[in-house]
Structure formats: C-alpha cells, structure tokens
Image 1: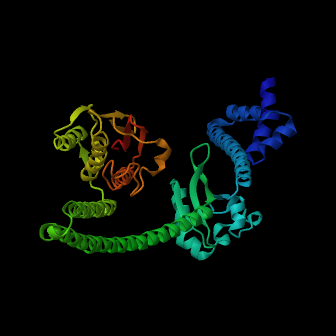
Image 2: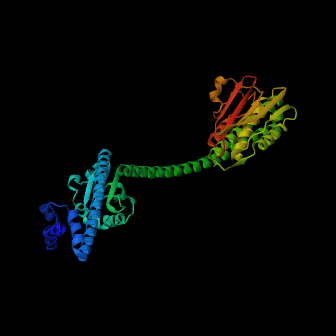
Image 3: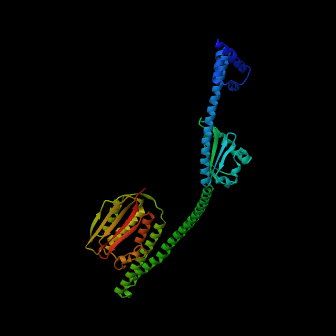
Length: 450
C-alpha cells in the first residue's frame, strides 16, 4: 500500500513533469534524485512507449559520448600537432635558408617560419590565419600553387625545384599531414634556398663554356702550328739535304776526276772527312725530323706483345754485328697497352744504345726484364757497356746532348729525348742508373690498362 502511495504521490507527478517537457536535470536537482533513478522510474512506470523513448535517448547519449571521445582524440592530435609545430618552428628558425609553412583545409596558414620567407619578401609574423591566396600573387596561386595544394590534399607528396617570382631558387617539398585517424587535416611546405648553388652552377657553366672556347681556339692554333711545323719539316728535309747531297757529289767528283792533281793520301782523307760529315749531318736531320714527327703523331693504342717485339728488335740489331759475342737474356715480359709503332721506337732506341755502348767489351751482355705492380709495369734494359758519370745525368734526355764524343760512339743525341717524349705521352716515366765502365740500366713504366 505504501508503495502504491509513493508511486502515486511522488513518482507519477515527477514523470508527468518530465513528459510535459521539464528538463530531467532540473527535476533531479529539485527532487534530489539521480538521473539514473529518474530514467529507471520512467522505464518501469512510464509504459512501453516511454521505454522505447528511453532507448532512443540512450542511443543519443551513446552517440554524444562517442562524439565527446572523438573530440578528445582530435584535441589530443591537435596538441600533438602543436608539439610538431613547435619542432618545425625551432628547425626553421635554426637552419639558415629554409622556410616551413603549414596550410589547413581552408588554405589558411597555421604556421609560417624560417628566414627564407623573409629573404623572399614575406612578413612571416602576419601570415598565420591568412589564406595563401591573400599572400601570394594571383598569377602565382592560379598558375602553380592551386594545383599543388589540390594534389597534396589528395595524398601526394611533391618534390620539385623552382624559381620564385622574386628570383630566388628553391628546392620545395610538399607533404600531407594526417591525424590519428589517418585523415589529412593540413599540408606542409618545406623550402630550401638553393640560390647560391644555382649561381655557382651558372658560374661554373660559364667558366666551362669559356674554357671550351679557349680549348677550341688553342686547338685551332695547335693545328695551325702543326701545319706550319710540317711545312718547316718539309723545308728542312728538302732545303738542307739538297746542298748536302751536292757537297757529297762534289767530293766524289774530286776523288774520281782530280785526285791525280792533289796529294793522293791527303786528298782522299779530306774527301772522306767531307763525306763522313755529310753523312752525319744527314743523320742528324733525319733524327730531328723523326723527333718532330713522333711528337705530333696521335696515339693509336692497342695490345702489345712486348716479349715478341723485344726479341725481334734484338735479332735485327745483333745479326748485323757478326764479329761480336752477345749474351742476351730476355725474361718473360708482360704485355702492354700503347701505340705499337711508338713503343717499338722506344725499344729500338734503348736496345741499340745497349748494343752500341757495349761494343768495346769482349762479351756484350744485355738483360731485358719487367716487374708488374698494381697500376703500372716497369720494363728495364741493362748492359755492361761504357756507362757514364751520374753527375751529368740531367743532360741525358736533352736533345743533342751527348755524354760521349762522336769519335768514341756515333750518334746525334736525339734517341733518348724521343724515348722520354713517347713514354710520357703514354702516361709513364723513364729513368736510368749508370756507372762508368760498368754499364747502364734504363727503365720505363707504362700504366696497366683500365
């Protein structure tokens, strides 16, 4: 009975007020009951219709709760983004020549930091809150940034290099920024000033163009010099050799037709000296022309079987010296890579010197060997000939420089100068060791191919 009275006197009036639209929270405060108790009463005593209404309210409360939780996550993400913003500000502020900006979905600046913005003429302090279209020119926005922004909000990461309207060059990267749910809520622009690099590249390009022009001019001059040198060589060959041949002819005519009018022995001696000197002069001219020719000759490199080449040259040289005894040692020689005709000339010059300067020995000993290292091969020729004083070694590779008199050993002093020129053109070096009356070793290096 008491329960029925409590229901009629207290619960039903409160439910009637709730049904009439009184706020549930106000009722709870007025009658000192909890919201849960109020809705329990409504569910129990309000009938089926009220029960369905309560279920709908519970669903609405659940949706509200979910929305609140979602708002909490968004706020948390916003806080995290704020932390990231501070990091970006610190980075941009402490790295010279950079700019970092962030745009939201309304294309408003959330962040604008970095001295590169100031360099380009922007006031970074006034940019946050403004749309990008309010900051940059319409041509710049419509012609470039509008499409870039659309692509970035579509999820693309963009990396490009471009020149700004103010004339600066930048490397620009545009990155979508996502919240905790993976949704893009903003995009970030990172710009690095590469104007200095571009200016250096342009300067380097201009220098290269200038150098290329200089090289072309020098090439023209070199070709002209070579043409003139060829003309000079022809002139030397023709204009100098022709008189020499006439002198030699007059000498022979003197011996053949007028020897009886002169002292026979003296006239013959003088005529022989004339012919000998003419022959020496012709040899000198030939060597000089050969030196000039080899200096101008372009390298035509290929593989060279050095051992076969050396043995062939030694056979040619020693077969002419039938009265001499030779002891020849040719060790296995590594193949080389170079101009066959020029390297052959080097071997001819070195080996002929070994044969020539050893002629006063009872037995001529010549040894040819090589040593291969990682980047080069060293070839050497050793003889037991006259040798020379190393105090005069600075003259050995000079043109027309001789350390022995012509009466001792014939020659013009061109062969070693030519050998040095050829080896150096191949990227190698040449040297020697010698001792008077004990012999000489000449050695030269060639780079290993590749």
